[in-house]
Image 1: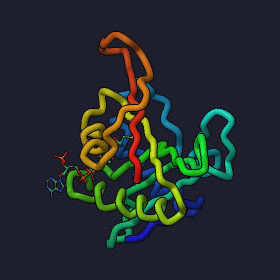
Image 2: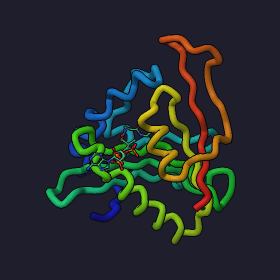
Image 3: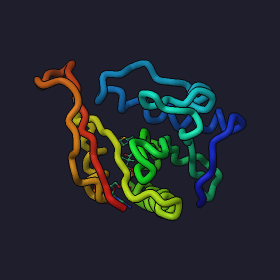
Length: 164
Ligand SMILES: CC(C)(COP(=O)(O)OP(=O)(O)OC[C@H]1O[C@@H](n2cnc3c(N)ncnc32)[C@H](O)[C@@H]1OP(=O)(O)O)[C@@H](O)C(=O)NCCC(=O)NCCS
């Protein structure tokens, strides 16, 4: 398995993976899912972000199925920090150790590129996600974002940090 840059010819594989993870919109309350084509051609950027720093990458398994995609932004705040905007394992491939294995591959690559700090945001209602990040070393909360009161239709996120 290796990390590949996603290009437009991979659009259908990416769409299938995105469709399998639609269930997580209930954690964020955000129901407008972006299409694979939008993600490839018009990446989401942080405020004042530039397209050149945005990356959309993926991993295919040995059966040639796209099992992971990962969106991130390089040089966020400074040259040592990378903002991990999205990390997904195809729904039917979860809970099999793939997430941990593939995350390690990305972290190795980022280390080699000179990054020492990875930050990300995760929805509080996504406790499978929080558990995954915590168990993989993203265990420092550096920011709290969102609603103050817990209700069925309120949402919040935490920003987590790992020094690699
Ligand atoms: C969060 C996410 C990336 C985790 O991916 P994953 O491939 O399921 O991760 P892993 O398999 O490495 O680990 C998940 C759990 O499965 C367990 N596991 C690993 N191999 C296993 C096996 N063969 N049988 C049973 N459980 C197993 C791991 O120990 C881990 O358990 P833990 O939570 O008790 O530590 C995945 O659930 C996902 O894509 N979710 C949707 C998107 C999302 O929420 N992204 C993160 C927020 S931005």
